[in-house]
Length: 270
Image 1 (cartoon, rainbow, N blue to C red):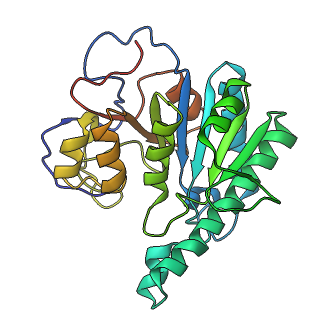
Image 2 (tube, rainbow, N blue to C red; image 1 turned 90 degrees about the horizontal axis):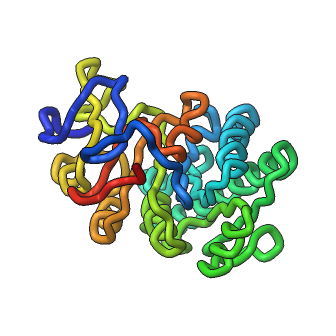
């Protein structure tokens, strides 16, 4: 989450969150359809594999917002199993390493699907960009939209189905394809900072920053391809801390939380 200190955005203390680039946010309205991006590392609780306690907590929060009427689509990373770029550094072919990472995302998707359906009673569909007909549907945007309209959660696995693209980029692409209002990017930190808060105690968090500023300042909350895609298509991103209980529901309700990344004219429902 590092970046360049002294960025020109609206940097505030860590307790401050974002809603929009301005305007009254005292009576926020919930989003109708969202794309929730979850990092794979958090699914493992800091270890390799899946931590059932973490997945159960995430499933409970997702079920809460679905019951409240919000349509939720999800993209999950696979970093708790494999990271293609890291495997490449150890000498593995990058394309093959990325395909391994895609399979890791599907394992996370199936784990979350099970907790949503078995523990929370929420109908869930997994769609993958690579053919895995015994465990998931093929990704078809119109079918995904129909599932959402019926109140089902849709989880997208397998990344884009192509190597060299991250799950951040997948999240941006899927959000645009199925008509989401916002990308909710759940991280292990409170928002976007002007420096890495894990190594710099003086790092300041942004209430709001534009896509272009984030790219120019190299604030690495997501990869540049994802940021560029969202910037070009006026798709706002809200970055927030998944590890704080209830934050998924707060983000979906449009509460002031985390950091808003948007174009200057972009807002969220108020």
